[in-house]
Figure 1 (cartoon, rainbow, N blue to C red):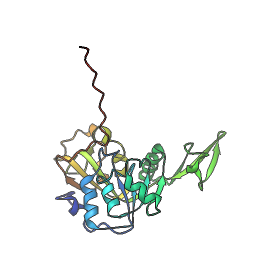
Figure 2: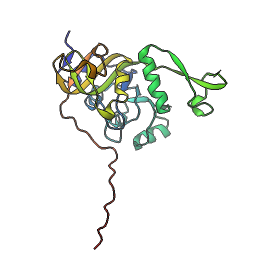
Figure 3: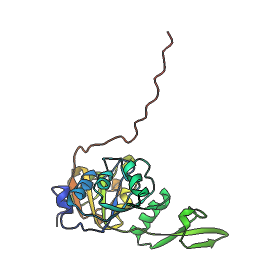
Figure 4: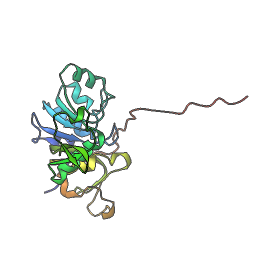
Length: 237
């Protein structure tokens, strides 16, 4: 069965439901599956649990799902760029499960590898460890963290082929490859779609066995989250 579909809306048609857990790749606004996020918005599904490093910004990325109140809970590491997120969280409207960034990455990797839980030093003795099992190994305390596995993973790749093999570019090669392995259904939007066999096997980051649907999204908008420039030096007269 072919994996290529004509649009993000078609890719998610018939598979979305209220209360699902969805993983969304990307770091900041880099490598986010924006066309697929927009398709979720159009679907109207609600009470979603979303696993993502961050929640986008106001009006872009996962921020568009916060606007429509479709997200019930975020499992995240960094959420400091979204005012609406802060408002919903402080009002009790949005639930948040905070994770150290490395712990979040490992929870996703573990879920994809079939590892139900693991122990880490990160967070021991802090709020992160409250309510979690702590065990002692070799004289040090470790907190138990559970693996994460979602109903759907949405990823953005720089290149993909008809079999679902994916290549990620630079910073976009962050949470995307791990999330692609950690869900019942993985949908990838790709900037460059090529025939099977066109990608050097040594350059494939995610094998096609993990990907069920592919959407070609050429020339996606790539916003800069924080534009920082060096102050211009005054020339000496």
